[in-house]
Image (tube, rainbow, N blue to C red; front, side):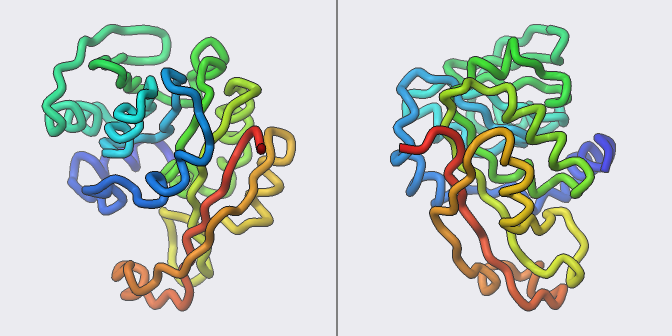
Length: 219
């Protein structure tokens, strides 16, 4: 799955993965992590997620990573923010207040950027990647975060043979395997959401769970 796949989705407006609300599970569980105020929080493959606005309101410095320039510009326009832009080796940086989004490939980010992140919220990144990319994504991104990082990962668990992703099913055994050399991944919530997801129902999916993991340092 290459960059053009996602860029085309944004150009054509096929962005059902975008939520026009703050993720309730973020609001419920983020306060339990005790990520320090002022700490930098990474939101990988962020799109124009409103979760970044919420995280910034909690007093964090937010760092989003997104391929689509269209998505980035829509985020700032729709939230009535006027970003200052500059270029770097990582892409185009858009900065407004305590929110910064880098329009570029997250695989080009290195420890110089990622090691300053003490928090991470991953709702739409891991499940957007095919299985062949997920382990390298975790090693590259999570393996370069601050050693003391804390975060939340939200995955989907459904019979993959019943519907083609994305979003893909990422079962717990895979999560444990790909995070084993990086940090603990502890399930803190699992719930059936099939009745809330008409796309999955219409595809004939028989079971759909959303799973929340606490990542990084565990108290």
